[in-house]
Amino acid sequence: MNKNNINTIIYDCDGVLFDSEDAVLAYYDFICERFNLPKIQRDNHEDVRKALMKTNEEIIRMLTDDERLIEEILEFAKNMNFKRFLNLMKPEKNLKETLEILYDKGYNLAVFTNRGHSLHYLLEHFGLEKYFKIKITSFDVTKPKPDPEGVFKILDFFKIAQENVLYIGDTTNDLYAAKNAKVHFVAYKNRLEDSPLIHNHLEILNFL
Image (cartoon, rainbow, N blue to C red; front, side, top):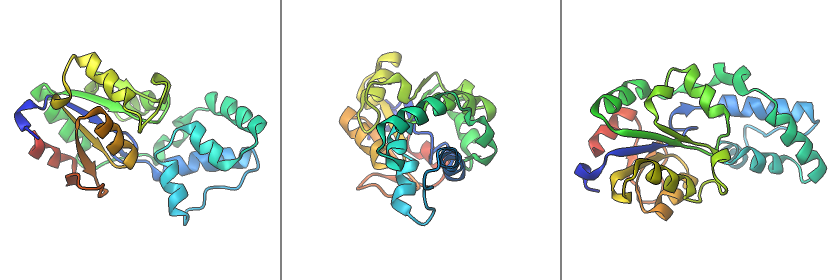
């Protein structure tokens, strides 16, 4: 990785910008209660991991295979406001301080997430929206991560090459979206293959 070439940083949202486990599980608890479905068990680490990295529809399909019910839940979820769970979202340590440094230095900052429309008012609620020039959600792509479509949209938006980009993520979805787009990748708080690993947002500055 040539530090001098990096001018753009792409962030995943859940698990990178925010510790969102409590909020995401509370959201799906609410849906399960509404539709009389079994909740995601906190001690089922694989299901919890999936709930934090997959799209809303993919997670709902984990809860039931009844197509009629899935359509009903998706319609309900579309009109449901995630704002009631914002108090359970926790910005990661030194996030805002790091974004401020990068913003002041003129780096292009972007978000690429499998989260839906809630990303926008989530960032606004925590005063982070101004830092990101482009925000790609699951509604902005035809194929969510690990497909690299969202990364390519960001490359096109900034008119930059792959070598100019550093992607920061915490799941294999992020890693393979970055690999498939041939951009640099750093793992956050989760060892992913041979990728460099950081545990604090300020450590990002070591790669720039």
